[in-house]
Length: 45
Image (tube, rainbow, N blue to C red; front, side):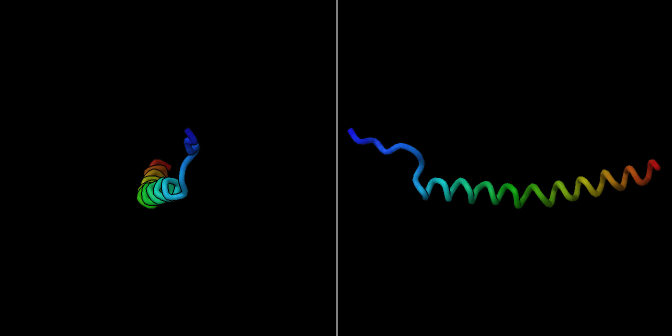
């Protein structure tokens, strides 16, 4: 039996696409959170 090892190109592209979607959603949320934290810190000072 000659079993293929590793991932195919299609599988890797799907994983990269999913990661890009997650990053695209997470970065705006992180920026919004950092802005609100800086606003709170400005109010404290």
